[in-house]
Length: 123
Image (cartoon, rainbow, N blue to C red; front, side, top):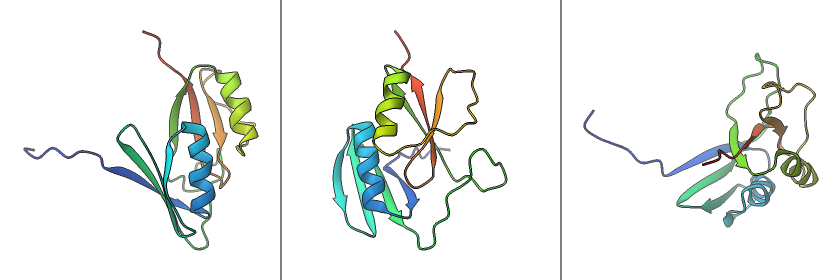
């Protein structure tokens, strides 16, 4: 291939775009750059995540591999325990099933999508 593309942004399906953006604003510290009931967006570091309303949205069931998981985000944190506490306070939940032997933590965001918090690489 001779053409190289640059990722402009990621758009995620959502049952509540404004609340979804507000949650990840708290998790990532990114600015909410657009917020309406049908579409919201956060931006940071030259990247954006959009959240688009999908009527009758059904989240996947973690860890059910037959439920049609659509995506998950991995985010780096400095302290797994502290991040887990803060993100749960912000509206995430921690499912019982946790793969990875404690190397990362799976949480579920307020609309039901799993995401992982991972220790920030050192060095």
